[in-house]
Image (cartoon, rainbow, N blue to C red):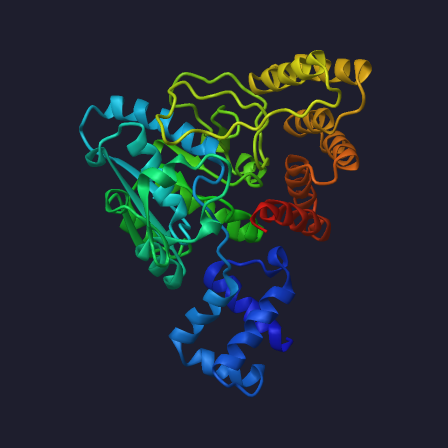
Length: 416
């Protein structure tokens, strides 16, 4: 076993990390940083020091974990949450408050976004409670401090910032009204005691976590998440994780761009099956949820980009989005083919064709059309995300990481 391999095994056993999912060089950099921090002579010396110190074990975990989050990331998930929460509260009829979990909660942006969305929708603070759990004590400390810099505020719609934050010397401080709705604590999803300690939640947010685990660990974590979610509850996941949950016995709820999943056995009336958007970044002309979220929180609406500057082309693109989001797969594909016959090739149309193939289970068709979209528009965010997830599911981790890196660079460009 190489010097690094024992550390890789430690991380896999302690936090479930599949080093291949993030790349060995990133973990090796963290190892050398910690070696320098404790003045270890080499990796052998550092291994001995780490074995004797639970604090240093946690420090290594903290060095490997790099939080990457912001307020209202994947905004349609929060719009869907509001719609579903209002319905759930009507069923509960005041018998108990809603219980919502954010795991991992990182530095707090996600659980606080949940609280802001519900408060802005008129939900009483007494009607819900949010728990935020993360393995990183440093992240929990920053979340409790609740002061944020500009990287936590991304996207075009930031009315919530004026309503719920005030300026301070360190940045933007979150109001106490929001903070008091969220309970933050250190915890590990692989801890067997977690499920017995926490009980069932109405809504669980666990986004962009499963993709970092190997298959056996994914199964373990899924069983934990399932036990933490009420029988009628909803699990919100990351855009690259839909295919994983489908294989593990969950089904999409049917709200486009929300990444919301429920147990395979239908609890309520069946929902008409839509084209499930498994792995996008921002949406394209998404269908709004039934109950609109009150200001200042509103869902982002990205506009279609027609290939020809004509009303007909733009209208046809909008029609394609509406058909796909309503579950009319055959009609959506026909509309895509019509567009390509009548107009110049368009990356957005090839993306939709890839998405239709993806949700139909035709991976080869999906890959072919995603690649065509990226040929025409190399930085197309949705095509990058979908193709990366598809390649990862096929075992091409190198190709997937390359595309994911492009997508991350694209997300960060507006900050520069």
